Length: 289
Length: 289
Image (tube, rainbow over all chains, first blue to last red; front, side, top):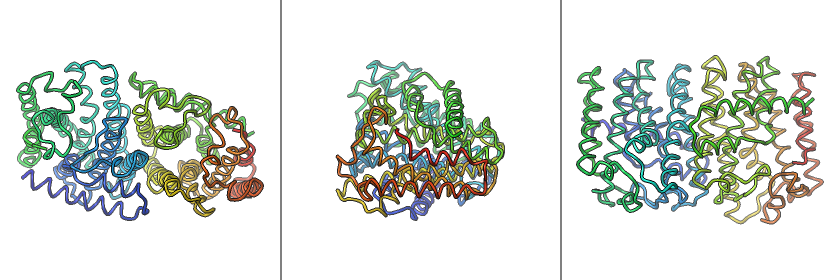
């Protein structure tokens, strides 16, 4: 159920991103944008589209907001991978943008992908009502800016600079900002598109996002670099606090399972219709990449 | 007239930017955002507010869109100054963000300032009508993304990488994208706020932006680093094509004067009310910083 749904969403998202970027001028920065948008699980886009479906919004409409979430996510990865940030050479099994091109191109690719995300949310294809688009844009800006994703990044850097292990509370807050905020927005977007109450899907996505991050820390310990598609063991090597270092492997797994139960419980109002989202929650802690 | 008007606009913009960023969390990245937004001529913000005034929109409203233009401009400068881009240590007479903090912080400061710009345009204070905000956001995204400002940056980098002098046509196109697009948007924003025809102000701002860029090239040759507030003579040293190298100093000055006349002519529909904008056009080629 979930695997078919996310594969279908991913197919639509990839085709739409190709279509959107087709008219852009022939420049390395545009090639880099296309490259950075390739591959990945499309979890955020899937959440947008599946949440929209639950509110009666079809895929031909919801794919636009899904592409905004994926373009924003791609920008964050390109900038995160820069030498001055996480300095990663490999992403989704491929050379990162600054390795394939150069740092200047990677900065511009990320910059332009952020703009593209807002551009998409402002298009009439995203939602016919201007007030819906503006509500999506306002919540998106809060999720990805200095009160959300960028704040999480900054907290991450501050912790590393201070050379001090974060507490469980601090790392939880950091992850809520760094990865949780965009996942929450992606969950809520479908309800916002239908001008419905976004609370159940927001609660679901908050728990899912937290479980996802713990699973990421577990993969960094247990995963295989070839399967994961990026370097593993980096956090332990860097002496960085993670959910695994703070809770132990079994403790982290137990917490992730609890979060999955919370995510499933939040979907109660949607009944059997929400099966794919329930399976998604179970999937994020069972994945091997 | 112009000097009083831009000083008044700058004062309002600076107070509003302070107010907007006051509630943000206490982090180096937020300090960096405030720092990057300090100083500067506020030409873009002034254009927004003066264009708005011509359409009956008061400063308490137009200052929001003016702050969006200035936040976007500040982001572009922070990223442009990075070591992998123009590698500048000095901006507006002060150390650049990556010198005062570090490169990672500078990347995040720019990223968050771009988000803030879109955030501001989505706020009800920017315009009560959702359709006005969405129109501003859509045109803003086109001006600053991969079809506008970032494209211009990419064309600039491509020319340097190729190690080949640009032609007059190419450098004109590059500047239309790199600096012209945001200046044009700033000019048009006031009309968009009033749901009026943006064409006269767009034509004005296009000519003004082109004159501004030629004046920048002239300052790079004739200016004094201490007065200009950044390094001068860099383009000539790098063997980079500029309007001065292509047209000669007198040719460049003549072209700038012609553009100022075009800018003034575009303001015809506004009559005597547009005096400050007319003076602004004359000012950009007479400035010494």
